[in-house]
Image (cartoon, rainbow, N blue to C red; front, side, top):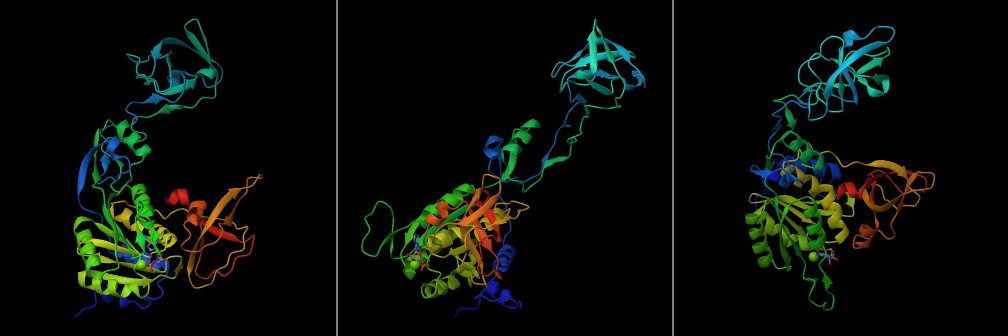
Amino acid sequence: MNTPPTILRDLSCADDYDPNSMPVPKAREVIARFLSPIATMERVAVRAALGRVLAEDVISPLDVPSHDNSAMDGYALRFADLKADGKTTLKMTGSSFAGVPFKGSLAAGQTVRIMTGGVVPAGADTIVMQEHADAKDGQITIGGGHKQGQHLRRAGEDLQKGQPALRKGQPVRPAEIGLIASLGIAEVSVYRKLRVAFFSTGDELVSIGSALGEGQIYDSNRYTLYGMLQRLDCEIVDMGVVRDDPKLLEAAFREAATIADVVITSGGVSVGEADFVKTLLNELGEVVFWKIAMKPGRPLAYGKIGNAHFFGLPGNPVSVMVTFYQFVRDALLKLAGRDPIEPLPTFRVPCTSTLKKAPGRTEFQRGILSRDNAGNMSVRVTGEQGSGILRSMSEANCFIILPTEQGNVTPGTLVEVQVMESVI
Ligand code: AMP
Ligand code: MG
């Protein structure tokens, strides 16, 4: 009959493995073991690379800057000409403006008017700011106190020809497309987009456009999932709502696994319903079901169906978002080739609310971070924290992350927050 899946078999050997109370970090670590980036890459134009992940190092074809140039508006000169004490007068022999260099080289006793970005003429080794020079009748007079090489940007100082300007695994953001363009590079190699298929499960679910019958609710998870996946720049396949019927579910899982790199479902992983999904997935692939020691978002399934990675998220709308951000997001980034994946930034601020919290699990309460008139940040909780209340996610601008051992929180206590804009 059902042989225990190899993922499960390997895991259950670990001393601290408890599928009924998986700590958040442990679940992350286990999932990470099974992820390797998609191998396919494609060449795209610089602008089209925005939001993608570099699949190869970008090697600089030039020195940056390409010439020694001036960091200031002023005068280029030979340091050796300057008197150690007292004033020096030099003869102006030309100019070097950005894009219009001085032709020829500087002889002893000469200077060239130079603007920021202007190429430093041959022979010159120092720039004196215009504020430190008096210009009169084709000559300039300069006082003491200058250093050799000052205000001069050396060729190759930022980047040398042949060196990697950007590394494989780097996400391409506005700074990166600018940097790539600054090297004169028109096309880069990026990983292909991750293909993610998802569907909602539940007999009670109705899609928008249909009227609600008794006991029915609108499917919101497919919309939040759509939004979260869009933000991660995935290619999305929305497979709609699938009834709690083993035959329909089996067909949906099989189809999803053939068309996508990742399959995400919501609902049907909690006690009771999980049983037939579990049986089904054990036949189709290798899937582990965990009760994560967290709130919201306790039930979670992870595994492989064929070559596709599978995430079975809980049904409650807030749980879907929390489990997505705490587990799926990093997994998708890793599959999409991101390297390294930096942990989402968190910081500590005083909490002005009283928070109910039982030790033994990590909680992700929804918070509102604000700044008072004196400039001090604090956080308060959004109202009711039920895992079905999607409004709590909409009102919040941060998660308040309460660690396993934490009990109730009294006002004034420092708590860890994760700003949602940095998450989504
Ligand atoms: P389940 O995990 O399937 O038992 O679902 C847990 C709760 O989440 C139930 O109240 C479901 O009605 C609700 N739920 C499940 N899927 C969705 C969905 N796609 N949109 C909104 N609520 C859902
Ligand atoms: Mg259900």
